[in-house]
Length: 251
Image 1 (cartoon, helix red, strand yellow):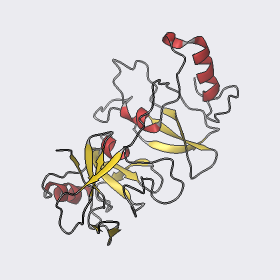
Image 2 (cartoon, one colour):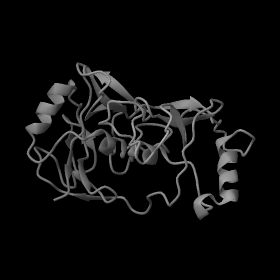
Image 3 (cartoon, helix red, strand yellow):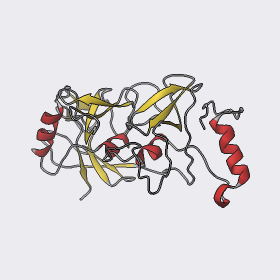
C-alpha cells in the first residue's frame, strides 16, 4: 500500500492511515505516528549490499522503495521528506506522491542537546567544540580550513575529495571523518533559510555538501555526503571536492 502525505486526514493519506491504526490499537498501542527522517534513517543498514537496505530478520517484507517521514520540507511548500530503502537516499517529494509507510511509536528525542567546551586545535579560540548530549559525540564548530574565533568561524573551508578528506582526518589527533548516521544527525530540517544545521551550535555554517566516511556500496567510485543547503542525502563521486567537518567520541 502507498499513501500521500498531506497530513490532513483525507482518504488515502498517511495521516488517515495513522488515525485508523490508532483506532484499532495496533499491538495494544494508540500512539503510532510517522517517523522523523532521522528515526527512519537510523534503521537503514548502510553495510548491506542486497536490497532492501534493512535487517530483514526484524523488518520482514520491507519494500525497497521510498517511505514517507513525518518531516515537512520547510523550504518547499507542499513537499515532505522520504527515505528510500533500496539506496538509502533521502529526498524532498511532493506530498501528492504515493509512498510506502512504516510507523513508529515513542517520544522523539528532545530536551537540551548541545554544550560547549575547549579542545586545543590549531588557532581555535575558546569553546571551539560542540558536545552533543544526544549522541555522545564532539564536533568541531567549524568546517576544516576555517578558524573558530570564540564566537564565529572565519576563513574559507578547504575543499577535499574523499581520499584527501580521509587522509586529512587521520592526521588530526583524536579526530575523524564522521560516518553517515553521525553526520545526518546534525541536519536540522526545521530550518527554512541558511544552512540546515543548528545556528547556535554552528554559527555561520556553510551550505556545502559535507563528506561522510560511509561508502555507497552500489558504486565503489562514490561515497555518501549530505548537502547542508537543504539536508538532501546523495552519493557523490569520490573525486568530488567539497567540505569536511570532523568529529570525535567524547572522552
